Image (cartoon, rainbow, N blue to C red; front, side, top):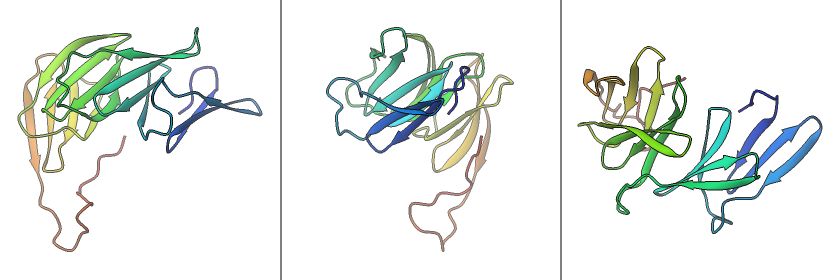
Length: 169
């Protein structure tokens, strides 16, 4: 991802880097996450890291990571993330919930009824498109209603880890 200053942010396995001009620099991971595999998201011009049920936001002014407490159960894990078109980060949970986090707070909680949200796409028109590996459905971001369900059948010839159709941003 590229931020508004032109800095390129890269994630490789358990490391994160940024390129500014001709310089490549490594960003130290949050405390206790050295050598840990994590997923990386970019929202509000800010890098975010996810590992299990832990969420971190990079604080540029201090050059450090800030853990965001979401009050989720320790049994639940983060299954997907996506930038919110109006600011913040959408987070899908293994319990079927979707949270919207802005800055350091959870500001919206949307229950879903179709499984773990693995892929989330904010269409910028008040809907989230959510892929659970079994169905694709839309959720109204203003009311939290499931609006549309698009079921699909796994192709018998596909490998087990391929779940069509794919959602692309």
